[in-house]
Length: 275
Image 1 (cartoon, rainbow, N blue to C red):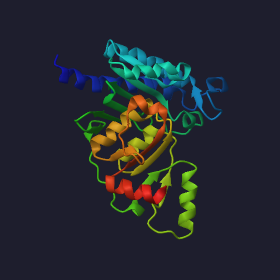
Image 2: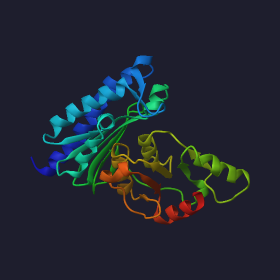
Image 3: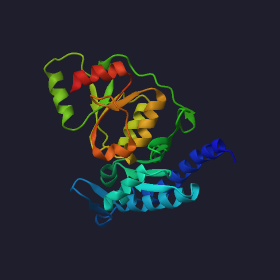
Image 4: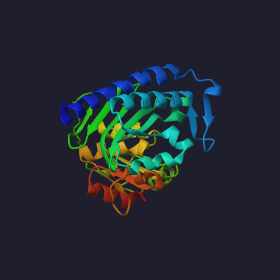
């Protein structure tokens, strides 16, 4: 089998694995969690559920069979042992896995959560997957070959006016923008949200429901590697604020600020307007 053929089959096989794991380990528990199925991690608001843990184990088992010799950086394993992140600096292919992105939403019975997976080698994201199991939608990306949503190629046609854009901003930033709007300040985006689910927000950019996103703090690869490659492939402008450097999965845990906008010009206008 040629390398290209293998990679094409890998795109399909990983999506199928994610769908099976999501159905059996996540959707089967949605709305059915008991108190002992949920616990806090580092902070009271940072939750993990039995679904997160079991789905990550199943994903690792399945991916190891699909790509022998690869290694793994799973969100839950990394919480238990931060040295797992060092695998991103090696030469072996690395899978980053967020088995249940939007855990708090899931635990509260909100149908806003995803499973995210990316394949990284030598510091470069090669492929990525974001699955919304409730909506039965999966976005896939392979570097240099565009983004597909349930097998359909994505086109990117965002609005030109900032005031017509919908954006995702942090819980502390949105009230500040709203206060400025209430005072009559013009040329501000009128629609602001936050899903508290990175995968859902990246998917919303792909379908035109969302046009810009700001993330701050730790920028872990299981949250952002797949989505950042998707943004690059559709032609959006995704960079760190101020320096305008591209996202590097191996350095994501160090933190920073990511800003995603339709173009470099709108990136500059929005950055000046919002921050």
